[in-house]
Length: 459
Image: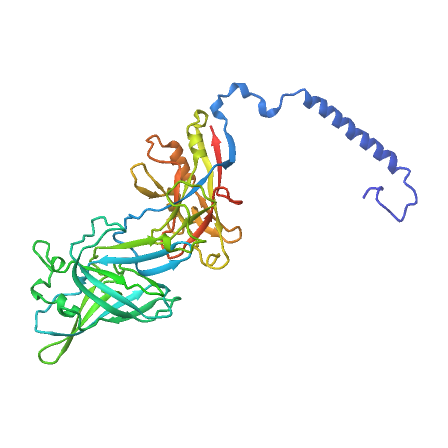
């Protein structure tokens, strides 16, 4: 311990003070000399700069002012064949109007027909309803109609396709009241008095056709399939179910059962399956009537190129938001920006809530981006599948604090900037992969518009 610090044994500091003065002077002298020496040297970071080629240096830049413009779009012809989820019914929305959904599907024999005498006693349709929206206050009725044309698993079918029917219809199939917060497994009893005959008798009217063949006329050509519809109601109901192939052989969820008796009074059953292991051809049909929306909430601009302060996104292939990035196109056309690597490209789209129908708990939890080639083919942005399981890199999730959807798209942007074919446009479409939730987005000249952040390294 130096004598500078307090010591109760000493009463004066006559030796300590002169020692510290010399120490301070020594340090001051050293600092002055160091300053003059360093001032005579070149800056270390610049030494040899003129000896290195320019491409040995990179420049990292960030732009958060690239323009992004939003438009509300609608395409009534969307490909819907081989759906993972099928929808049935109708729903009304004060902003989006009326949406009607139905689906067409083949049905498949659940086994080999034994060709023994029988009497059809009754028919039930079992459905595994994944979700139910609306329609909780009254009964609803299903209608099935036989289609007149064959459909195929390897053919393309679209949401606005007109369906020809044979005229055979089974109507007034009562649907029980469904719970909207859970899966519903339901059994529907088909009316026995359908003209000209009941469904069970109609589908088995020619037992010589109850077989499958790849070379001659069989059950597929004898009975081509059905269109399923829920009859209109003042309290509309929309349900969803999956017609996808089951993961376990024979674990069917959606099927008809024919309850029969033989001539000796014995009973037997036979099933016709919708979600068959040997996949049935199927497709969804959707119609959207925007004119039934409330006058003060109705969407004013669709497909007209108008940059409104709001844009819209609707489930079941309804309206969607298109975002264009003209600033990105300017960068691509700038010769000085040819050699760049994208470090960050983030698109942020704010959400508009009304506090009643549209709030954080009622809008989609996440959205997806796709782009369209000049040939008209749509692709999901490559960033979405960088993490194919959770899509955590791409995100697309709603930030419920900032009330914004965030999308990371550096792979898409890099691909666009490097594309020499001209097939990719600096445009993106916001859509919902699955689900039955709409959302309203802020756009263009709103107080919090769409934001595109871009960071790159220039070589």
